[in-house]
Length: 122
Image 1: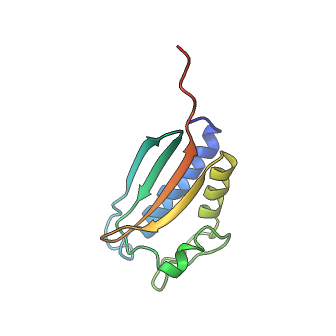
Image 2: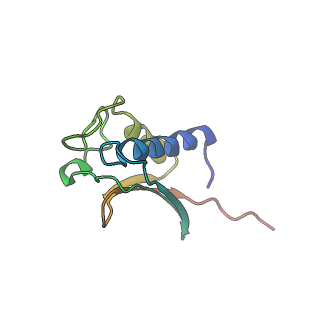
Image 3: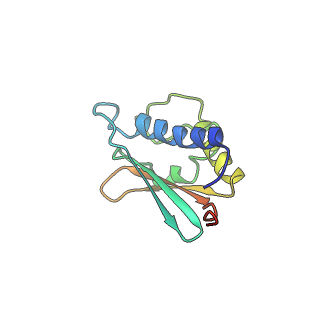
């Protein structure tokens, strides 16, 4: 993919830090975070997944709202509630988006979809 390296770093760093912060059972165990990337047609999909308690369904639609710091009862309310909003803005500025979902078996996954760079001419 092509884009502003600093902004893309910020996007993925925000997602990984978020998974680290919220991807444990109230911080009692180390976070189990998986990052994977694949090309799907003319797009690149990157998933940042954790095995924490997941996100309450009613919060899934709000996690990208500015200043939202939900994740239900018992959540560690640290930060300003801007990280996911900023990550989504960066994705959109690069022609992409981020989606949030709960994983089967626990935890959540954030899927970043961005345009793939055209193959280099030979």
